[in-house]
Length: 339
Image (cartoon, rainbow, N blue to C red):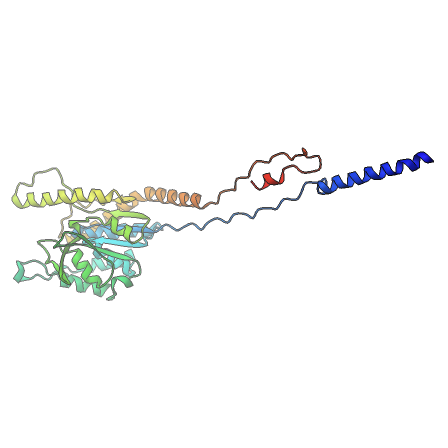
């Protein structure tokens, strides 16, 4: 009996020690609950802004209509439009809201006399006022900034030789300035400056399309190419020299396009308006041939953007063993969880 009485203080002390140890270790041998991190929200993927850059080439410019027709038929609709010379004419109509079939109908109904106002007092060159009025009529007299698609017409300032990109103001006048081929059209006076054909400095306006915000530029090159023959005359030599200079200049800007479409229109002369149907068909063929490449590059660009927008999983710090080796349920030191 006395042995039991004596053991009571010892049992009480042991129980108290166990309770204190339990309190020190959190009082529960089970692992502490871990908070579930919220799922990261993916960033929105920016849509690809497609631009089309339509080059100069006089009557060859009808090929642009065929290119646009095939792009639209395959679900590729440009968001912004830039044009030089003949490309600015087609580009202005497209930016105004016309689709390719409406533009084709307009092209077939075009009478060359509607845009040819020859000035006898300036050596027989075309004034260009008729072209300006014709374009303004077709676009509903809307200024450039009110077009349904952002539009730029590229011209050359005669006094300085600088490239000028018209993105505001009189649409017909900007197209006229962009299309004023030296020696064929009178220079266009706007303010105190004079402007001539944009093809002098930018045969295919890839950079203008980029300025309008295009991420992906489809360039359409209809410029005349040298054919490996000697012109054999003074005028022919001059024309071929100009062609060579434009070709070299255009190569630098075309290198900044994602896709270059080249309709086979080299046999169509600058004034061969009766060849408009052939030019449109060549544009269709060239665009259709380029379609696999266009699709592949667009798909790659979209995939790259999706990958870049995908959130990254947070990197967890390695767990350090608890000071008591998990004896009381702690697997990691508190300070390691906050590393």
